[in-house]
Image 1 (spheres, one colour):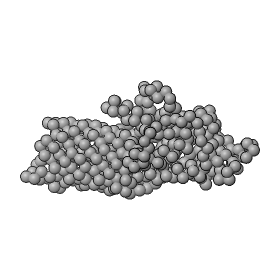
Image 2: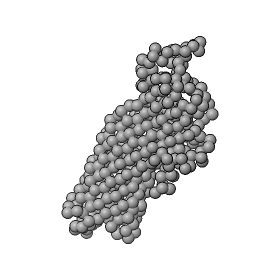
Image 3: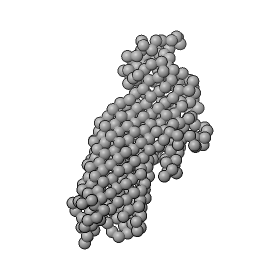
Image 4: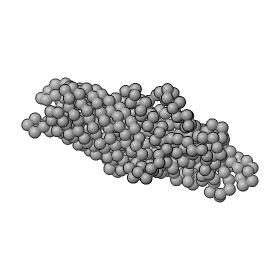
Length: 348
């Protein structure tokens, strides 16, 4: 599991953040447009990402006609998010996604990796099972290998995912192996990435084209944050053959999400002559562009979004004695995101 977590961290860094040598001048209008696009996309991407894990091939883990069954293991995979929204926001702060062929990501989306430890138990009296999942990344895990990224700014990462579900299985057939389950679950996801903005003259021009908001070049920090809580109704059909279990399912969820960024840096505003302008005198103007919490130490834009999401999922497992190897694919119908995972568990 430790190696899986480290691999996930490395992928996040490589895919999300790397530095360019110099800042380009941006406008507050462009910043607001890019932030709004980023947050709107996350309203669909985050709930979908939180459904990684507990997508087992078996619609029911209890034994027939009765008896307790359980399983425990780990799943690792990814879901995609809109490439342009992430790319444009990071570019506002001179942080780039280090890929050469951006056209392919424009079409398929940017893969965001994840993992979850899983446990499920069922067959306690009635054909119902319960599942839980959990994943956590401590910022201290980052310290052991940040030296491998000597050409990039310093990073920190935090991540936690908690989920659970309950499934009722009214249909279990033996002659023609078929199980159908109906379930309810929830997922809570919180996380963020903090990066040191490369030194340089970071500035945002006002709509008058004259005044400028400038970040202090002495070690400014950018933090991207996200959080979501979603509840899901789902149904699944599986065909429990002896060595092979194909399955498919669909889930409908409602999510409350929150996403945005925080900039920690000394700020200054200047006019066309380079003379200082009081932050208080332009605070209302900055708020009109979505900047909140504006002070001499930084600013932020954090927004909340509620959304309905619908996904289809399916795949198959290889059944080897008490070992299950699960391959799962997912598709977010409303958001257009893709996902896949590989699970390995002990089950009996």
